[in-house]
Length: 259
Image 1: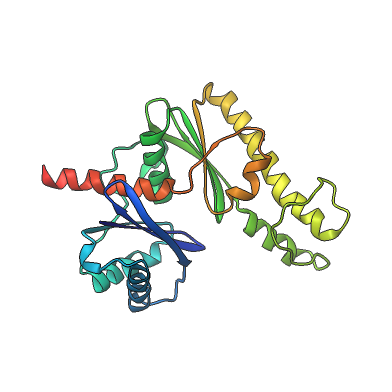
Image 2: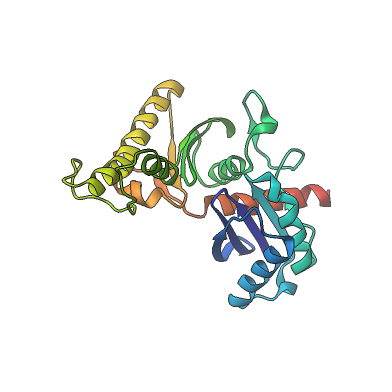
């Protein structure tokens, strides 16, 4: 079994694969102040809750957009499982070509999503990933990462709006019944959900016009379910895209080692 860990800005997703099958996944809050022992305890507890012994884990792979936690989580995996985890980054064999100004600067999350999309969908492919940030990732017809659009995620935008405007209340993300709100809460929700849906639809149209062709559109991320039903474009929903990308990168790395 392979342990795959995706460290995001807001949450860390943990999954375990048995060959190509995802046995389970769980999420914990990403904390920059936790020690390696606290993360080790969390990983061990999650595996135990799902009836998996540490001895059943043969390898581990990590992607991270929080560099300060890379060493901490790597050490936590060593403490809890006795495994030297692979951390996705420069020098790691991914099988993905990168066509951009500074390939070393491309985030591990973007790489993992692109690797999985190339494996599961027809390229050129556009990936819509909605988490802390909203990203539209373009993978060209050659299966190469060819750029990304990055915008504030819905929660960040909502927090900024409420904190920056003293008369606006905090609201939960719920779908309002109409575009034009009849109260402040629904007005904010409309802007967040319908506004993000319109932004994504518009960006898809603009990117399509720029690149000339998109064969597949894939949607993933914690917040995409809020927006997905309201998109005019109908992307395939793939909630485990990044974890699958991690598994594929681990397998490719191991094949390189064996050779």
